[in-house]
Image (cartoon, rainbow, N blue to C red; front, side, top):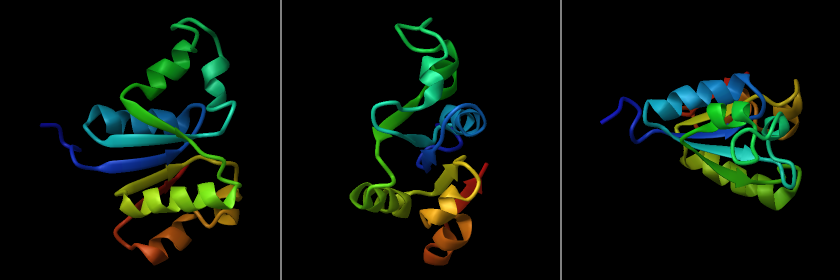
Length: 122
């Protein structure tokens, strides 16, 4: 048994900081669900093609995670994301400054709905 078995993390992430943080959580046993953009996903996928056509950087940072594609600007996709967050223990995001707030995915809004939720804005 690992320390974070039974913990669910929803990660709206790309590039380095948030994926590295959630990789640590996954390594400790958390179920990490990475939300990616349609058609392009995490832009770090394209840094190189060293690992079966994917970037070595991307593979290293995202091992042990599940991935789901959602266009969070679409109302139905945002509703799905909010339902996932509602069942999670942790929500981590590293969107551009202000983007989470515009989507009502900022810490203050999410914690007002669910005070037990751990929210990390990177």
